[in-house]
Length: 283
Image (cartoon, rainbow, N blue to C red; front, side, top):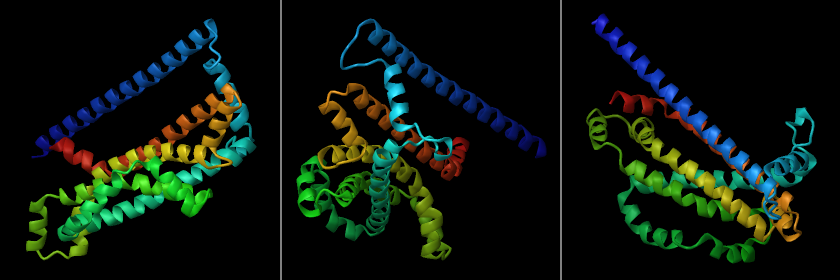
């Protein structure tokens, strides 16, 4: 028995090493592809001068001087980043956090109560099919042009993927596990925390990543429409004043911000769903 277990352990360790090396290779290929794209962009825009497509070297230098010229103990965050970038991050995270709380809570309620789901499904289908940008005038009329309008605009739109994935995750729990728990008389609170929640988490985390990317887009839209600061406002101001390098540096900073936020969520997902990947690999 010990010999068999040892062989299985060695095989599992070998598989993990292979998966790790494959993932490292994928990461290196992705980095190489990005660097190759930047190099091609640099060569083309240097050889043929396009007024609206400056070289990446100018864009990166402009981004560093405009956004990250602060001292090291402030993580190089400069005055412009403090007044333009940080408000955008606050609006983004506040709207997304509200959507996460509401989406998961309401999603669990609907998923656990089928009769309630039948009543709310028609109005939900109607509201979620409304284009988000069409609601901006409504939010402006009711909430004005302050941060509350932008936060509510973000949260009311990005809540849908979280809500729908949570409902789907709750309703797709293995019925055999639920029947076994009921037959053993396990309390409903423990069934919720030990069976339903873990089963729904993979779909919830998938929705969190999608909704975070969507929140970034909506944050930019709201700042371009009704704001006097923020990275979306800075990008639009650069376009309107023909400061093209400033516009592109804002776009680059925005893409880096989206990448970093996505990596943070993926790191949390990786740690929270370690058991899920282990069960899937063993299966």
